[in-house]
Amino acid sequence: MSTLMKASEQWSTRPADEKFNSLQSLHDAVTHYQDISREADHVDPRSLVASTREFDDDGTVRQEPVLVGPSGDAARFSHFSFGQVARLAGAPAAYLRGLPAALAATNLNHGLGTRDADSDLSLLFSENGGLRLRAAVTDHYTRIWNSDITARLLRLVDRSPEWQPAPAAFDGSRGLYASDHDMFAFLVDNDRRIFETEKGGGLGRGFFVWNSEVGAASFGIMTFYYEYVCGNHRVWGASGVQELRIPHVGNADERAFSKLTVELRKYADSSASADEAKVTAARVKMLGDDKDAVLDAVLGLSGVRLTRQVAGKAFDRAVEHAEWYGDPKSVWGFTGGLTEIARDMPHTDDRVALDRTAGKIMKIAF
Image (cartoon, rainbow, N blue to C red; front, side, top):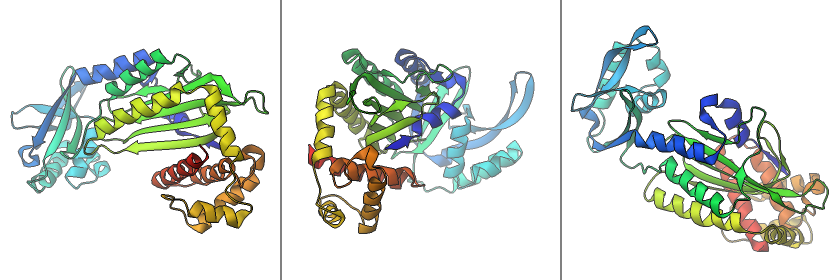
């Protein structure tokens, strides 16, 4: 069984004003961000000009770059949007931040002025005591509003009240986070635990949902079983981990809301006995009589892309942790070994791909 760190990383890096103790307060926060936002699509980057303005923040007057549109309105950059515009201009943001404001603006103007005329931008602003640029992405980007996600989570919990935000962390926060550029929610069903009578107190069920409406991250859902959650929101003894990511392109909003509504509702509405039956089926379903037979069976499955070397490592890892996963020749045991390998991979895309493979193998037991 693996340890999931995604929620713990959120807890350890977020400031206090980005942590929320209820789904309603999280929803209110991201709804406010949307209410004060306005979008500008099909913007020719050559119509934008970087300039400088003086701002007085708490008695400190300083000059900083701003983005001026065709109407003459000047928008301050957020830290995140400055990085986006710098990338669009082909300049390193860290370097520009160290330059005098006027010189940074000159570099941005040069880069934006040489972009392809056919590559329009989609801009997102906030209007709250002044105009601020929240995001600058290409027109290929499809925005998924965080408030649409939290609204669906509220409806989900209203229908299935067993699902609640994660147990309080050391500082009292509940695994709910949002800023002006992203959101993350960690929910659990800890009352309807499966295999409650077995060693370790059984397994609870949980899921993560995350998104960014400014291009900082894809939309994602991760579901899992777990043994317990500690005070820094590390998820211990995770198994049956499945992850879905949807990039913000095309009909991303339709696909995200369909998956969120259908998949999470199906997962949340399932009874403890139904999930217990699934895990039991995966524990007793054998892939083969020995290691070679298991590898042959796995590599022969449609849609499973594994090398024999990786599959062999997964089997060996399952053998090492047989006290957690049971028989390594079983579906549950072998996929547990894959999850162990995925946890140790340094690159997110590789971890996601292996977790998805484990999910496909798991389904043959159901």
